[in-house]
Length: 222
Length: 222
Image (tube, rainbow over all chains, first blue to last red; front, side, top):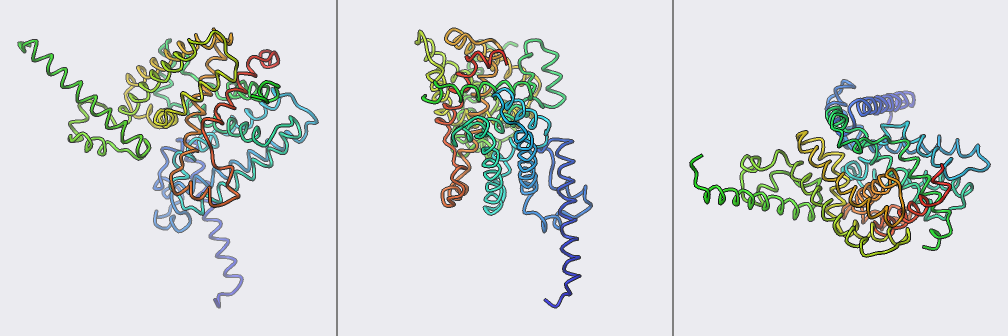
């Protein structure tokens, strides 16, 4: 505990720099190959560390990607709210277009959204899940405030809307990105035309219908 | 080729029986532990075979589960259409309830729906994917005929509806089934109340709004 203050600061700084480098390597590899194919060894190699040294910074491969998922939520929410805040009023179709557009331009986040409940949340400590959930629920609340201002949705309708937006962004992205081998199959066999999925227009149509229906009197009383 | 006919028949029968036993073991293990945690070795052990012998019947672990996903589509589609066919007319809320109810009562199928595009389709031969896709697209067409009769949807709206129903059934099921450890976390920390997801009511609400919105004039022209 006699460590001089400047040395502690320098070591904290070095630690932060190392953590940032690990996250940046995971981001780059995830974007290039898809999350499923990136191992802890790949990330360690990219930052020129031993796997055991890397595990002093993060619990598991999954914690690294869960950290990137939380970051994705914060950045998406910030962009989305920035757009919505500038509008005095908006139709369901306009809001759907903003939701779909801000999600579809974040392929790594879409990949992570599908992987998080299936794989990531299940291979980290309880404290990591708690912190991740608190981040996402906090962003949901902030997004909800903007949606309520524009569309007068109830709390339940906000949860339904945001879970459809993020759930379908994840699911559609996985369908739309089947790898080169399957894409070739889908385009070469005319019977498989409907297996080809485009994320943004489909997500925009689904969310337009959802938000329109939430505002319709029959849905509210159903 | 001089094998007597009765012997060929018996051997074909034995092969079929073996295949059925493998699928049944995978079904049981998948229901009990969730697909992600079932290995090829688990399945081989359950049917008392060597892994190498099992691989004479199926290409990979993923092909076994993709086969069960195709079976899930046929059975779900059959039940769903059986229900819809008995109705002369139906509101969006009624159709949504049938879609949500027939999906939520099939936990194994919901698990498989999320796993298929992420993991299963990527670890089998092209011919297995082609056959799987033709099965699902065939069922989508059959379901679509019933939906069109009741709600006058376009082909694109049918694809959007069924992909939302199956995509969200998969995504919500994964969120609703986080394992005992995480469920304990969600129920013990009052700040995490919104992390608890109930598949059927949420799916029914989302599909009610979606189908209501698809029928609204503003959505049709959006």
